[in-house]
Structures are given as structure tokens and as C-alpha cells.
Image (cartoon, rainbow, N blue to C red; front, side, top):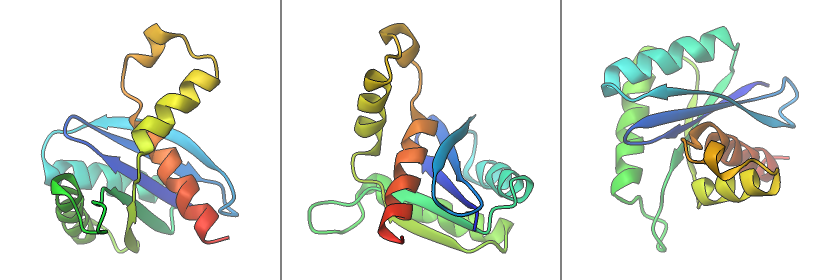
Amino acid sequence: MKILSVDPGQKNIGLAISDELGISAKPLTVIQHIKREIDAAQVATIAAEEHAEKIIIGQSLDDDGKPTFEGRRSARFAKVLRTQTDIPIELWDEGYSTQTARQNAIEMGIPRKKRRGHLDDLAAAVILRSYLESHS
């Protein structure tokens, strides 16, 4: 089953996709945040183009497992996205995905200049990898 992962941010939204078997996760693209409804329509379109059967949205949680401010923003995005597609949507703890993506970029030898941009698609891949590993 192909799964699309979404790392929603204030400026950019990172997307990653799994393979057909749901084993690997690879960064897909980054879309610029415009407005929640427009962003959701873009994600729904990409999910359909990629033949995704599920969408995972990263949600930040506090130490008690409750959504943070950004986590509540992710939940609102999921609510709007559900109006744009029939693909099942699940919120997933994004737990330090951006920091992990940054560390992965360093380990891959990506120069500092190229790391300066957004790591949102890599963070989406980290979220997806976490989801896949917990469901394998």
C-alpha cells in the first residue's frame, strides 16, 4: 500500500511517499503554504497522482502526548484535507522529524549551503519511516 506523508509547516509543506509494499520512504516534494484549503487541495491532488492509499500527517505532541500548538494546526489541516479526498488520513507523532532530517542530511554529506533550505520533504520521509516501522 502506497502511503503519502505530510509534514505541514508554517511556510512549507513537505511530502514523502512510500513504495508499493510500504517498506521504504522517499522525499517527494515541498509545496509552499498558501492557505489551508488550497494546501489541502494540492496534497489531495498529489496523493491521487501518486496512487496513495493512505495519508499520514505529522503532528507534534507534548511530553504528555497532547497536541502542541503546531499539532492542533496539523489536526485542522487534516480536517480540511478530509473534505478534499476520500483517502484515509491519520495523524502521526512527528517526534523531532526536522532535527532527524537535518542529521540525516549531514550524514549523507550534503554541504551546509544546500542544507540551508527547507528540509520539509526529508522530515516527511522521517515521519513516514517511523510510521512504516511501527506497522511492520
